[in-house]
Length: 202
Image (cartoon, rainbow, N blue to C red; front, side, top):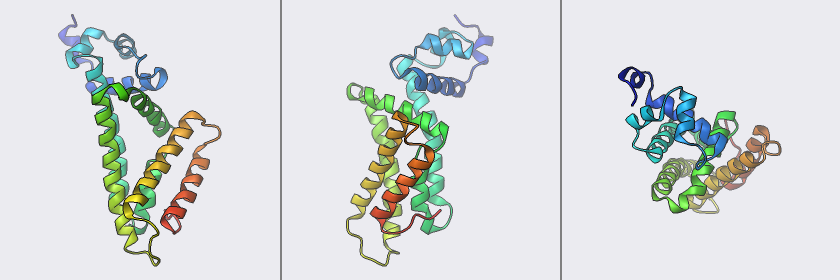
């Protein structure tokens, strides 16, 4: 059993960061509590002091890491000129930085295991819903300032933008060489301009 001193040397945030890194390396099913404990320089007994089991630990990790994604999206939604917020929000969701790409790789692991896990499926759905609510609001605000009448509904525009960001993120996770950050951003801009009907503005 872990000593009191040992328990005091570890923080849940540390566990989350190490767990996420190992999930990115080995996948959702392969990363074990023993390996995570070793990477932290502690024991599985210490981990179970904070988390009931591996699933509980991964759930906390998911929420902890996703909070940073949420902060980026919320910041893009709230800051800067109104005309640039929609594109900045889309850009924020693209894996054009290495940490963002690594995060998406782990998220894909969650997706592939979610079919039989209700809790994982629920978390993924919650994440998409948050992005959709923000994008829908930005799309509707953007439409009010367009000179030409949009060719589709605001809901369709929003869903297409989500499809573009998710598809490009997945392609980049599979083939980083072909879908480099520059290529990914370029393709997103082309798609954005065709869907929205105006130039993407920074």
